Image (cartoon, rainbow, N blue to C red; front, side, top):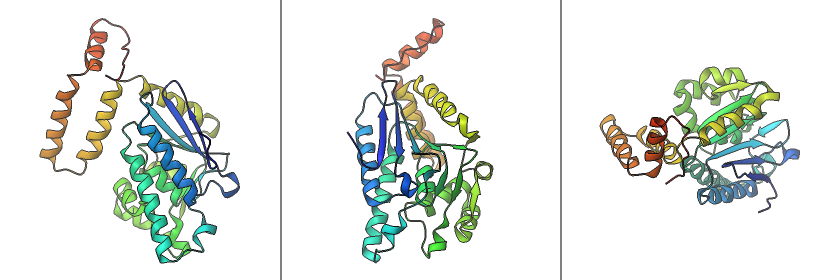
Length: 261
């Protein structure tokens, strides 16, 4: 399907690349772009071949430079709340997607762009990338989940500092405080993320999906409930063909060929 604001490459190797592609607006989110992204996520959730979803920004300057200020400037309270609710709905669906999601941050990740990265499982950045929640400079607050995901990622005090000041930080600082996993030279970013995505694709997809569910869901549970969820999921996987293939391959000293069954 063709999109006006996104470029989507669903490849046969199980990796789907999605680029937010509004270069004249530095890939800023307007409502139309969010709704297109929602459609891509819904299609991804139904794709049996999908193993990893990678999100990035079109062009060389921006991942997503925020929400579209030109669109927001005309909003009143009701429209603004609806716009926020769309962002929350889309990013919640992204967070709940059963396959791993990777944010490949190739430039500015500000406001809604940083919130998009925070909704992904793994974040890798170019050494040229910039991060920030500068909404306070516009007299508002983050509206797509940043006030909740950011403190869970880096702690309340550091999140308050970033949001209070509206400071924009470089990729190395973002890695140091826990927003980014690794920083790569801009010329190597795609190659490095490709390698990580391919490695994930080579693992048992049922186990990968189970890991994502257990780690994320259990983080909101008390330790007893979390451990019970792990035990139950561990046992369920022993009823899969992937478990048999994985263990037989190990014993036979050969690479496993997982089918996701």
